[in-house]
Length: 275
Image (cartoon, rainbow, N blue to C red; front, side):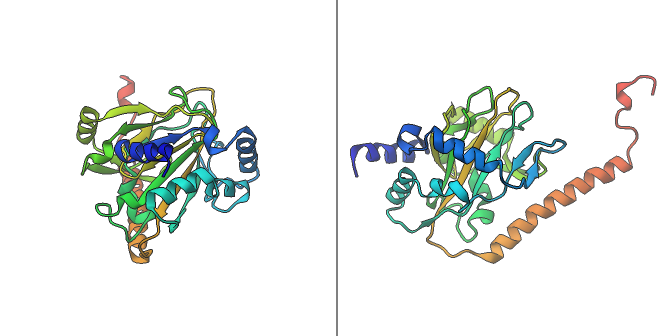
């Protein structure tokens, strides 16, 4: 292992993340433009609620120029070095579109909370070091347009309480509780991941991260790629139970809101003294 990779591995293990600049990843302006142009040819799978603005295009694994991401030399060198093996897989790749003006915030969370969805059969206690997340901006990421934020070394906190929620895109999420975030904020250093297109942020699945809404005029698309050291079998039963729970949570809680509204007085009566 050369000196540069030795330091990179040390930083990753110690801080919980590492950023590789675009000049090293080779994801230059031409490639970024090619990726963005390809997105425009795809069918939109989901829109930001109550808008006609795309939020997601589904899985991009193996599609068009996105193969350049999973074939990237720097990425595969990093994974091979970290896992000491070529036996790893990319189970998912998505585009996150935090659109200008209306792109919603993302709650403070750990990826490991949802391990039964993306790595069923793996243990959140014993196997978290076998899992990675790769984040690649397609647009410049700044504080103003809601860049990703994380807490350095937060993966060293063994356990954090979370609460199940429905986010603004009507998806099931697991948000770190307010009290647990006090602990994180008191013991770890907050970091804004301001990045350029083609940079590559690699972080482990226990790092606490989130992002603010994009109220700026600037677009903010990014690639989010999962990596799994392929050392355990996919457990279909665990996956089915986990995904059914998440679907059921959304349906039941939204239905509870509807039922409550149907049997409540005018929700807006307190806004007008005449009522």
